[in-house]
Image 1 (spheres, rainbow, N blue to C red):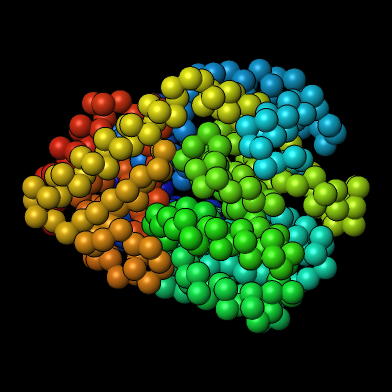
Image 2: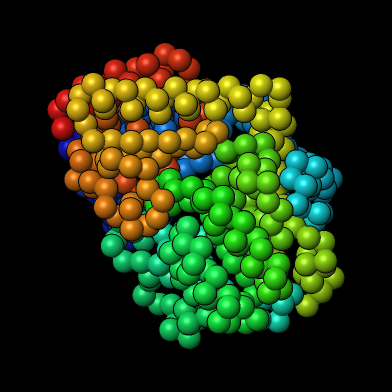
Length: 425
Ligand code: PLP
């Protein structure tokens, strides 16, 4: 047994399934998960000291690459002054100001510790604001693991072929209405029937938990128009896409002003930090101003805030997003090219530093399309790449990420390996 295998065996003794989040277990692709020892720039090293070019980036946060010196320095210097106070700090005011400056739809923002907390709190707030219970979500979209959101969700739940979870009361799930992604007619019909009972729509505006699927312009406009018409709250869940696809996130690309936005991942620079925010009349309903309760011992934790602040300041530097977008595009066009050269049925797309690739002819636009892609081929490709030093997400249902640390050489090496692996599978 190598070190990864030994650690995985040991982990299973006291950790259910040997992991602290299900998709890490390689359940979908089979085999032993890597135990990571170290990360630097675009690379990670496993317990057996093998180096990999990393396209997971901790599932999205590490837009600057692993252990960026400025982020590490900010974390260390902040931690030296104390890890947590459970009292306000100047740093969190600075981060809130910066988020509101960068995203015009956010007039007020609250910091939390995970994307799940952000979506869960945004939904409670939307319900408290509207006085309504019904929530609309879309098939294949994952918004964290709060009870009301584990209905036909994506990510690890797709790996289990089980789009819901045991332990969620039927009465809770009953208020979550699930529609197909990108289906304008279904959305219009639902609002025509019960629009006055709907508190909110929550959507991944570029879905990244059923592989990568983009919302069409007509779908986006329909969501905005219908929520305005019926007085419901439009929640953009940009936990994954926020500051990852564009400086103004997906809402900037769509030209849409959501009522509330959920942020996570990049905003915390690799530390446990997330946020939700939006219209100040809605945010005013939050405790201590209003009747909607929301709290957290470690909310706005100074060490996490310091990592987030440095990360956001870096990505605002001139040329950052252009360069990240170009690098990601080089990877995607290169993969499409080598797939063609090896007669592999394959397609791929990217926005900013986020990408998806599919063992199917066409780019999927719905959950049903994603389910029709060739999963067996994906698994063979995943393992072929892993064996040759390229770390991709261990599931056909996850998006991938390029960081500012990925060099031309990293991309070219990845493409050379992909060409060999396409031929092998
Ligand atoms: N929303 C989206 C779109 C996500 O991708 C995720 C996590 O991947 C979440 C919410 C939940 O975030 P967290 O895992 O930080 O709770």
